[in-house]
Image (cartoon, rainbow, N blue to C red; front, side):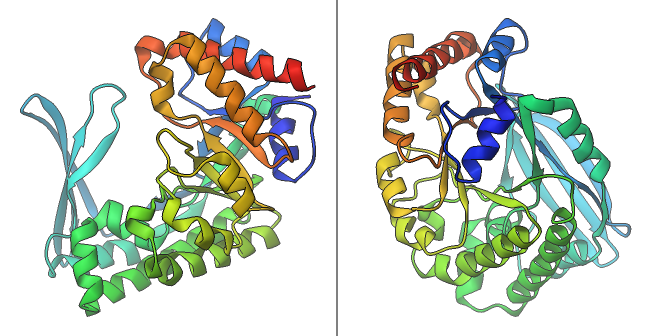
Length: 352
């Protein structure tokens, strides 16, 4: 059975006599290890954006520099009504970055950021998705990128959690107006992606109960997830929602949503919900697990043992996919992935 088919049949709720497992494109070392993993049935999951985005009345200036030995990016968005700037810091291992100063730092920044959002023009780019699907063939699947939900985007990308919490509590008019603009842009993105020639649609929310717990989830997340999941289901697509944080405070709330797939779910020792707890709480949903990144630093025997244990916990009853969704330290990539593959092979030999 092809790797692609393993994933799709599991997502459809079908039973298979094999382990469905996958890795994000770009995390695998090119060469013999990659070829070996593909030969053993590992699927390659490649994110693709099936649309283009531009803001014709916004000028973007990016300036890279070094501060205290670290690479930093200052990104400025200039509009007819003013400018906003964010500062991003890069970690040296993989080049990933995070905002240390957000675009919105004061009340006056809200209208400028809203101008950028409302000025955004979208165009379908379905050829990009078709190329990815064609290149992967039976070895994997395209995962169509959408956008973070409006609340997550505000907190992660635009203003940070402190300002979001304060301005939300104050019912700030500019806050509400920006959120409305983000929701309207989000609707346009999903309308385009719903027509894209892909089967899987990715909501990259990076959810955690530390931010999204309690009434916040019910007010800002649950209605959004239900609406988007229905839209995509009606279009024959599967919504795959990235929830890689600690979810202990959200287990029952997630159960009540229409989300079909919880992706990058991270079990202990990094997460705080076990696979068995999640499967019991979320019948009918597919659990697409993130192999905890800290395990890759362990001896090979421990990686292999944990892999078998994870599969023994997750595979019975179906609805389970083993995934690799986090960067693996370069120094251990080959040996760690080979150990994980041995764990998969050992489980398959014992159970199938």
